[in-house]
Image (cartoon, rainbow, N blue to C red; front, side, top):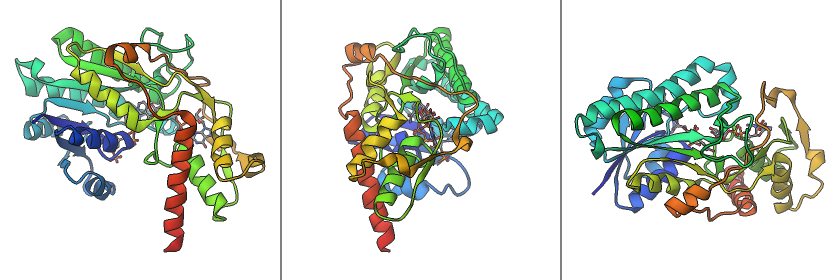
Length: 328
Ligand code: NDP
Ligand code: GDR
């Protein structure tokens, strides 16, 4: 039986990845931080077979302890301060967690493995946010990185440190440059879930309108359940490498709004959306569209859920959740 250690277990991807690994027969250990993490119950209810270990990716000794307890064959580093807007207000914290945290996990893994480093495979959650002010359209593995937020800068550090551990120590360390991926488990601070929650509430008469920032930004949105499969596939390859994981399609926030509102029978959605400068960013990433050719050809990976189905899945889930909450 293979063993995996997953950081960021309480997040969207941590939950989907654990479900995938458990379904493949892995023993899964999840790193959870804090004295009394409010999301521990969520993890226990969604994936009760995951064994939770206390630790924080900013704390090297907690990582060494987690590695020693779990003895993993695979380490997936998903833990991060992941909300881009928050990263301007907390640039130092973001650098410590999203940037230096990667170094800690790499170093703890190297120290734990000792001379036989090849026995552990490592995955780093890199991001399309690293492309920022994009230098190629579409963006691919070789595209010059030009991050536009403290989050993006921290991810670039983690990305290159992962490559450096591969090149310096021969570590099986892969970096997945994942484009935005969403699901009913997406945090409500991200634009997709903010919209689908509001659309559900507006259609049930629980909310009047939604306030947003830049509606013209374009993203390459896929389904998180599909993307965690690519993470796993990367660690099953003989050679570690870096891969863009994306759908190859891009859509604006406006298009997302249009499909979400249409799904609940509202066509004149513009009257329900207000723009609030508080949600604008000091520097925006205007356009993301990935070229997933390498992942398709080398990993045999492709997304299964298309954009419109993703939007509808999220609205349906929020409708069900809101109905349940308002019936209480
Ligand atoms: P989430 O924000 O849902 O989850 C982030 C996770 O990181 C949470 O489990 C959080 O734990 C954990 N975390 C935060 N700080 C620390 C810390 N100091 N030590 C240990 N864990 C910590 O993110 P996603 O699941 O969406 O994303 C997973 C990873 O993939 C992240 O690294 C993100 O940056 C990256 N990524 C995400 C993309 C996306 O579109 N979703 C695209 C590209 C990359 P807690 O609950 O305790 O806060
Ligand atoms: P992003 O996701 O920054 O791409 O990072 P987010 O959903 O926060 O923003 C996407 C785009 O929507 C615009 N936008 C708004 N965003 C939010 N959150 N709230 C609003 O009200 C709003 N109005 C407009 C933003 O300006 C932006 O252009 C996500 C995270 O998961 C990162 O961790 C990950 O690395 C990248 O995706 C790939």
